[in-house]
Image (cartoon, rainbow over all chains, first blue to last red; front, side):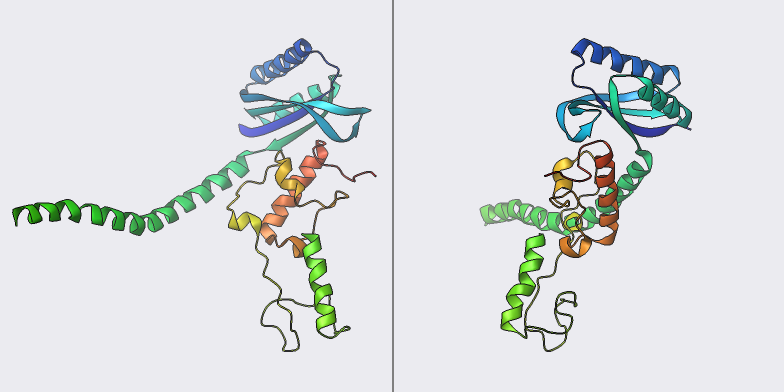
Length: 140
Length: 108
């Protein structure tokens, strides 16, 4: 059962860029090995933390967007927990939310059509009679 | 937002009766009992009017507006957010707190 997840984690600020890339590559590797796919990876950069975490005042935020199995997420979380540079992480399931959003958008799209129809027709209506009138005037 | 609601009853108090029954927490909707002279503007849900469907925990700017100075979630009766959106909002705020985007309690 593949589901959409969003994994955000914070890496301690004193980690070098190469190590950070290596860490992300390693995590992506675990996901692809476990039968999941990484949809996108986003480095949100260094940010001040709202409170002190393991005596760090700031951290590198990284966001992974992936579709994976529940057991794979458990494995990924275990890895995040044991990897020393990661100080905090959160996993959020997104597919239910996406489904709800799609529904809302669909409803809104149907409503828009109804409201757009009368708005469009008056615009189209004067445009059509205008050329129709000009020939009559020209002929007259 | 909190200032708005606190100032309204205060400005009302000298004009009308100073110690009216249930002055502060009473229903301030329009068309109430006849004794009420002040008129409170009806608050509307920001998420409904602006059609914000998704309340993400990543959107710190948005969430910050619904968190008090000390880091508490501002109640619905002050912000005017509808029940559905308040539920989603509080969930997003709690997720944001978990990942250190928002504070649990702001220090002084």
